[in-house]
Length: 469
Image (cartoon, rainbow, N blue to C red; front, side, top):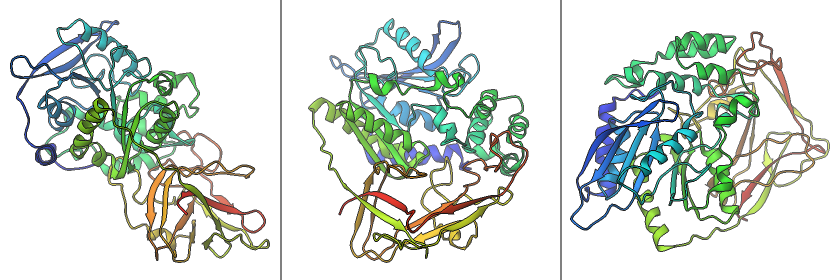
């Protein structure tokens, strides 16, 4: 977790917002609201009303439901930026957070609560709004949606390809204790050594229960439910929204954001349905993709929607790179008698996570440390003779014994550089260790080493990239 002071971060983001957007166009007022839910629970919210000249109406009303509170920097990009540019904003805290009633259960109550909030909004003296949610069962007066670093299926975030994401432990801990955060930032509520000992323990679930100290019980239930089709996850699945949305949609993410896989899947499905959808993914972490730097594009999206501008999409061809027995990558088929290569993954000494799509302290880093580890295979191409532009997602390979999906990417490998593939059996602490026994990773008590083999020769292994020729 980041340790920067919330106050210093807010100062930086406020200054950056003024830099990228200019000064506010109007003043505004904020008033506290209590919003009743059908089960008697009340959600806490703040309503921002722009102060506009006589005869000028607000552009619309933006609805935001958020688990991170309604103070400090969270109000900047979720409310103040829009209120200062002619929009009404209703910023509401999720159940169990920042003054809202009941208990916080991540991703389980937002859909039903948002419907109730909209019903309440219709009874208030402000209408004609643009809002940012409710796409699973969209209200008829929903105009447009902006999703910054978002997911439609929380189960797939917690259990990624059958492996438990360990950052869910620190995230759940942070949300449960955000009211205790001091000027020292998240470090005031998170002991890194205690967190690491929790992630290294077996079974993880028992250690996490002690770590949470009676809070975040939903996170323990999620740990114990690796089957994403289990009824437990039903309320956290909103893939149906991809089939129901009929309004313009803006998606934004970062290549080093943990949520980008679902951002790309949402874009592909909504676009295939013929709905107007805009996508921007850059070399950013989640915080960088969703911060004040996103605001110009958000407002440009509204302009593009009202002017009806259209974006074209350029198809790219596919290139295949084969993995050779001498640890090289080449577009030529390897010799039929090329020997396989093996490595052993030992969960007692797991392959470390170095950068990448992390909630914090991720991003682009020098990962050459992998080349000296005995528990990985490293394949490297010769220097490229021309630029190789990679964008999109490769087509599924048919007939292969085993296929590992390369998630959507966008990158230009420059002439003279090399393409490298690193094959490992784990990435700790990003992903819970594979115990080597077939037992749920969060419940396993026994750890065994596992040997992996990559085939070459007549049983080729290949890297398929969506590339320009």
